[in-house]
Image 1 (cartoon, rainbow, N blue to C red):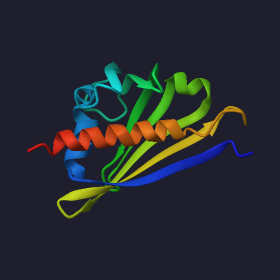
Image 2: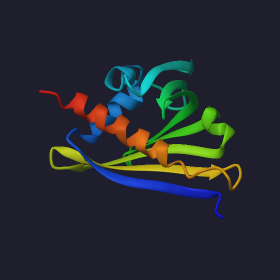
Image 3: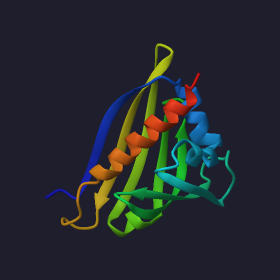
Length: 150
């Protein structure tokens, strides 16, 4: 059984890559307002809201259970990619590597979002993180809907 893998899906968004990335890069503290049923809070642990490499702690729910995820954001402006590099938290008790990645490309007035989760399980009995991809899709949908409200 494989311990390393990538989950991937593609979604069409109404918001532009710039608008979507701006929330993640400089206003992550607003994300709980866009996704109140999923993400309950995000706190700055080290750095500030606008500097790449800053470390944030997310409090969220998945399958009715509250969890915590500590990450460092890495942005590649040239490739329109933003990655949350997992450092600590509930996920890191099951995965050696857990990195949600957003890759957006312009499409008309909106964008095409490629959502990726790079992971490495600590052992073969750990499930593939499908429920976290579902969470990532829900968060993306909620943020997009809030960004494009008339």
